[in-house]
Picture 1 (cartoon, one colour):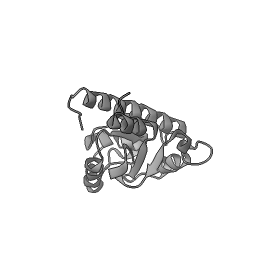
Picture 2: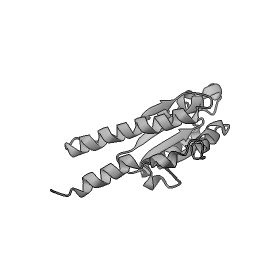
Picture 3: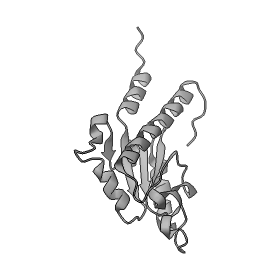
Length: 157
């Protein structure tokens, strides 16, 4: 039996995703729901999901809040620092399109105006169950990217 180190690493990444959360400037409703996922009620760590503060270690980027000209640069930098393959989740109405602030002069729009988004989670704020489901869907996107890389195809990002 041949031992494939890269396959072993990829399996570990899919079974224990590391998630970084960035708040572009929301009302904190989405942030509270993300933190609720870490409480004993939902306990995402039992699924192997770890919340990290460094994007260089993250597989998934959770983004909440409205994107404005000041934080769009930071958001793009965070995305660029993440390793491939990676997935991005836009949380809440503000992350999807700017929410109730979309007509404000300083709102660029949703997260997808700055970086590519893989999973959209609607709601104001979205429920913890929806956030956990989004991470699972994002893992499916990462798995697709890993399979493409194994076949020698270019990985988008």
